[in-house]
Image (cartoon, rainbow, N blue to C red):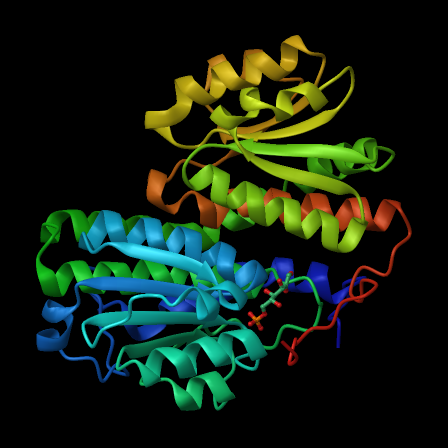
Length: 366
Ligand code: F6R
């Protein structure tokens, strides 16, 4: 059942190229120039009327939502708010019939997410679910549903479900842009072409696991570490940090790179591991200067960026290269080394990788 892999988590990490292809599937036309969402009841007229989007989810699905917010705002120019489900319901969010509420849930059974969905519907919003389970409660109760075709996810730590949620968000954001004509058809084609190249690029990253395994073994003796990045790199850093905590039990924090010096920099001392993501061209210089700040305090830095970023390579202790793609799509690649890092750190510590302590796969209590 583990198809020769030592753990479900490793198997699921390796299933991501397939999950990407299946989630894109027939949602891209044969010519690669258009997004097709035959399953959506949401009409172009309704889309034109949407004046705000709320994204609501828990844990890893919330982290996928952070990327979704970025993609929708950039591509479709609709303002997006995002909340964790357990907070959303209790803050009296402003929900109108012109609000599109997107709930994201791998299992489709998470109690807080379900309660948020029901509250949104009660207020007259249209609810779109992004879920991995056909026929789940969230899928049944939402007005519309985009299934992520990641296949069953057994390991408690979510990997392929998260990354295929990213693909679903990219596709849906492109679809909104196509309907609202907020982007040229040339640009939409460019993004689609880059999306289709992702599965092979993930394969390339998976082939370089040794480098991450070595770094994971190195950090496994530490009790605190940091993930830093800006923009979408910060969102991916949050996911990397959660993954590591969840299965290795090593404490970590994700920080917006520019925010460190407002307090947390005090925790950086000789040998503290810092994983720094710098995949966004427009933010690159700024992140590199934050890397220099932690290096100057003795941090042991693993840098993650495109292969040709020499300034970055010079500034870090170790560098992991991810293949070139559009800035918008880098999370679908940069999360892979972070999943591997969590996996190999957990393994090095002799933990139960697939069934971490205190956690359940599906959280059906509030
Ligand atoms: C972490 C993880 C959790 C889930 C969260 C939501 O690896 O798996 O944070 O993402 O419990 O679960 P779903 O997506 O099923 O609603």
